[in-house]
Length: 171
Image 1 (spheres, rainbow, N blue to C red):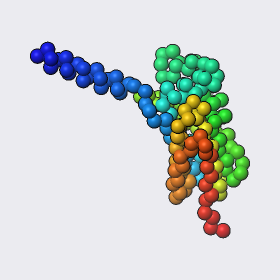
Image 2 (cartoon, one colour):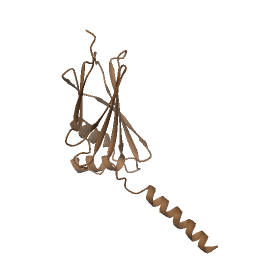
Image 3 (cartoon, rainbow, N blue to C red):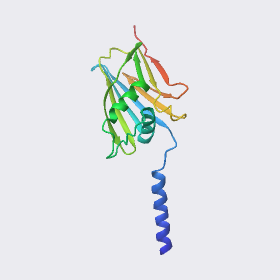
Image 4 (cartoon, rainbow, N blue to C red):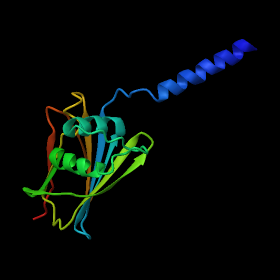
């Protein structure tokens, strides 16, 4: 009986440790959707909290403690500055500045919400995302674009952190 209890404890303890251990894949997901009726691009970004804290914390020498009771009061200031430096969007050759709307936590991940207003027809879109690449050589940033009927996904890596999409024109 004691052996069954001990084995059950060891299995549960091992499962608990493995579920909270460091993840070995360094990926992020950014979804960009163009809303022509609103003339806006809505951007959602997803990162693992620990990866983001490492990158932003080392860049600004700050301990953000995201998603905890000790979260730095002005963490969003540093996150916005990091985003401005590491994430860029150009439409028809003009660099656009996304407005940071806020963040939301879900388990061990953080979601950022951004928006770009006054976006006219998109003929060419370029996206650069070098987030986390300074701390993880193997970082992969997935970019999922939805512009009208066009769905396109890019995988950006340190050696190629920028991609461009030319829309088909009917002129």
